[in-house]
Amino acid sequence: MIIIDQEKCQGCGTCAAMYPACIKMNEAGKAEVIDAECASCNHDEVVASCAFGAISK
Ligand code: SF4
Image (tube, rainbow, N blue to C red; front, top):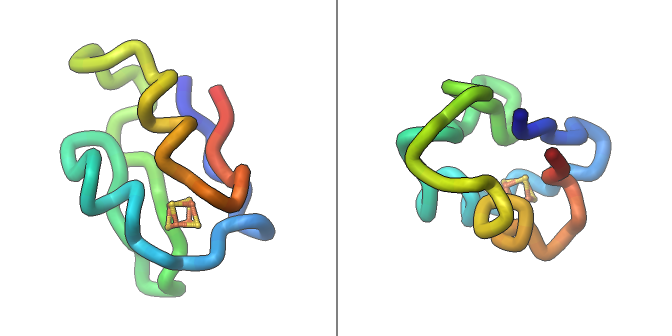
């Protein structure tokens, strides 16, 4: 399960652009998980996509 720390998220949009099936940007400009149990990857790549350490699993 992917967890996005809303405090750490800087709203850069990188994760949502790289993994649109799993993450979208919300009205507040922060990343939000669409499908926490997304089966198309094992999440390590998604976690690594955030340069700010906001994504964990
Ligand atoms: S890559 Fe990190 S800082 Fe950028 S939108 Fe995603 S969670 Fe937020």
